[in-house]
Amino acid sequence: MYSDVEEAYIELQKEMERQAIQMLLQVKTQQVQEIKQTLQKELDAFEESMYQTSQSDLPADLKGALTGKASEAAKEFLKNIKKLELTSPVKGC
Image 1: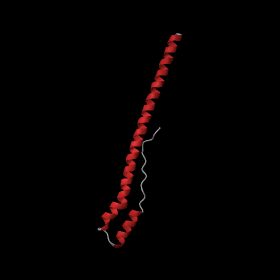
Image 2 (image 1 turned 135 degrees about the vertical axis):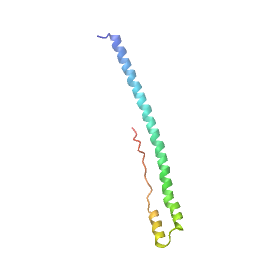
Image 3 (image 1 turned 60 degrees about the vertical axis):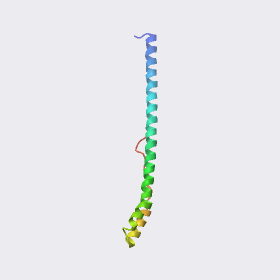
Image 4 (image 1 turned 120 degrees about the vertical axis):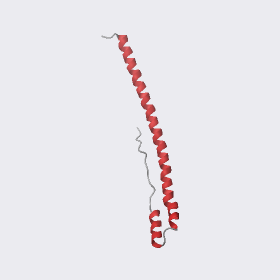
């Protein structure tokens, strides 16, 4: 039905399309990885901020507000709060 030249041309076009699709996938994969890394850095900073707040800022703020056993219980509770581990919801390839 097709001549050899036409078949070769069609195959060449298909191969070029495959290569273009592969290139697009690589670019998008890289973009997703960059988004994931950026978001993880932001989440890490947020984790640290929340941890610092629970370990130093809140106990200092509660110092004058609570007295006696309530004050000690609040300090102990805040001291025992573990650091969060937030992970990026972006799934990489």
